[in-house]
Length: 238
Image 1 (cartoon, rainbow, N blue to C red):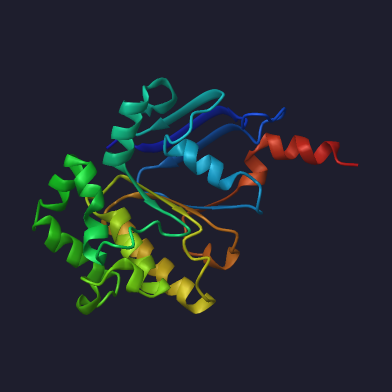
Image 2: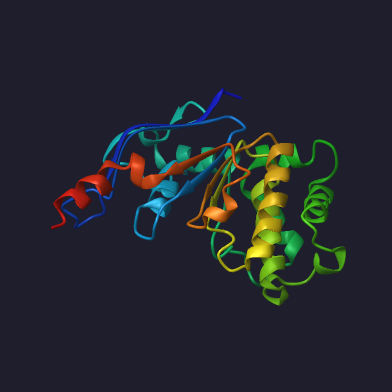
């Protein structure tokens, strides 16, 4: 795997209809295996940046590289393939399919990526690997075959984390995944996620506004400090 997992250079992004960019980032780099805590207030562009890093959106200007692949220079189908093979997403609302069981939700990335299916089945079957991850994330076996809609918020969170981790993607992107939990459960979950990410040797970009969670990350990045669009906007406010 390349030594650099994520690389951004001269990135500029503006939503349709806006006159000014919401993101203007000269440089950002995340090393392979590095665990980064990215923070900033609501509206600072955190989720927009994650969409660009995942190839869901493309910048107006600049370069976004994932494992050496220049996402913004690739056609949509190729971006989709890189995203499916190499990035595990953990969303704020989890985005589980409510009618599927917990274990079937975990296995979804193996449906879309043959590479992740092969990796998941390298030591055991993909189903067994899904169960292993759920066990490591403290979800009891009696919950594995329940529909996602029947699970508690904390259980759904663990299922979403296992789904992001299955097949050992090189990059995990987590967008405010602990916002629905109290402080004690937040810390427990972050510890579990960090442990499993380290076991997979994956880079982790964890977005949150809660600074209490930052202590165990390798590096903390304030989006306001690297985003020139926010800096310029604040300079014109009277």
